[in-house]
Length: 422
Image (cartoon, rainbow, N blue to C red):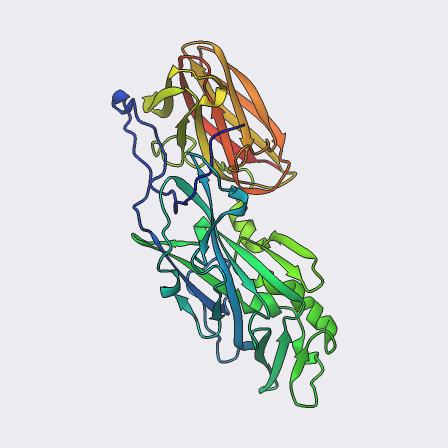
């Protein structure tokens, strides 16, 4: 399905929506197009975390009896990007995101970050302005290893028989890497957004027997390509996924690349089986989590009505436009897993019999269908439509499109569900 998307600029967090009442008095509005105040700033904190929690807001410090403690860990921050969907369009590639930092007047800027010191970045980001018109999906941060001398190793100690044995893990197997954080992991305040970048020590070393590693003549456990090489290889594979992000990619020293989701974070975000992944699919909360879009000569208005105690979305199409997607009711941020079996269910009727299109795709401009696209024949009596399908690709931000254009009519929709059944 095609739609206008991409604009230079990005909005943060579409959690606020214009409300709808439960009567025709709401007719004429365009629901759910997210808006936030101007001049939203960004801060970030970087820390070491010793907790076992999957998603936390504050990192836990090491306890006195922690088996492995990191003493010094530094990296070089090279980029901060935002990834958003948009409802007006021009020219930015959404898949590449919008570069927030470094700024245009200092494109080569880098920022040394100490995770062990608990770095908090505010001044360096003071000119970041997260603007209106879209909906935030992710914030990405990129780091480079070996950018500055001394930033290519992690220093720490291992407790063994009440003694602390120092170790040095060399990051020489990795050149650079990027982390992308889901919008639900980002702390949003009235005028500021904070990103917490935490490195989880127990995920990094849990299950590894560092106490059996060979100790060098200098009394230090050296973990690198030559010394304790098997342990080094295991830690290389664990290093980037030990950050508490949704997903990551990194380039190895040999130039090959790896990208994936952080499994425990994705397990939380991807949702449970047999649970409706469409937030507010029964319109109990009015228009919350829905976006209404008209384009390409389409015109329509919406309202939330009560029918037999149930909330119903009414879309009154006054001008059909040239395409089915000239009038759209959209629901974003539906997490789906490649190869999963899903069921799409909704009830729909109209005052004029005709076709609408339902599909699952992504938020990127001109994105391909992911699992199903159906032309549904809508009658003048309410009927429940059901479609079982398999998804083609994993997507934390899949988008359900109900394309209602091309004809002048009034359409009623209720009980929208998308459920993973296998």
